[in-house]
Image (cartoon, rainbow, N blue to C red; front, side, top):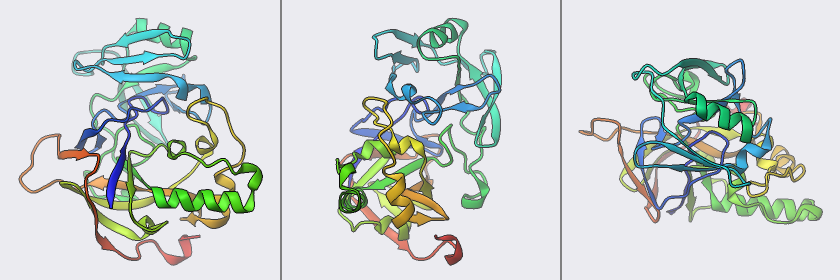
Length: 292
């Protein structure tokens, strides 16, 4: 197998970056979902509520600033705020987990209000602040502002199989779905469809990962990531019928990186397109009664 896709989402639910290589940190790919939009209560805002968010393009500068560009061409470069520097702090929430994040400067908030929506832009400058779900992780595992876990893996053969099912059962929806609908971090090719459901530990290039939990899917997968338009019931309709894990329509698997022996600091290693992918452990993990 090979690593054939790498994707980083600097702002939760905004447009992706697709580098040829990227450093891996304990809480995810470097730069992945360290920024987020929040509502007045501090709860995260995503394409679930506002599909237009996904149309805002993102860049990360060498100095750590975030650059946002709207479809209309409005552009802002926003320095990363920091709790250590004394910038304002907000308590924010992602799926019930509350943690502190630094607020972007007032000028950035005004730009967001004018060009994106009535939201606050926050930055997770301390990625150790949010523990991963203890049910599927180990003590000390943390995550950025991703939905639940540091990395999401998808398999191209599984997407091909899903598209075949949709074309057979719902020919009116037969336009093949692109992988971008599923917003993975790493995409692998060269194994059978749905093989990833049985993986428990894998190696990608120089790093190993625990495969901890299937990814239950939501309405974002029905959203065209290039136009921001909702495109109907697929793939949720077909996944719900043919591929439910832990009682949810599922596609992809969540990963947590292992720390290599002798490696200290935030960077565990680097992933590169073309890296070899090897399954180190497989087998049953979830209780049989919870698979469907």
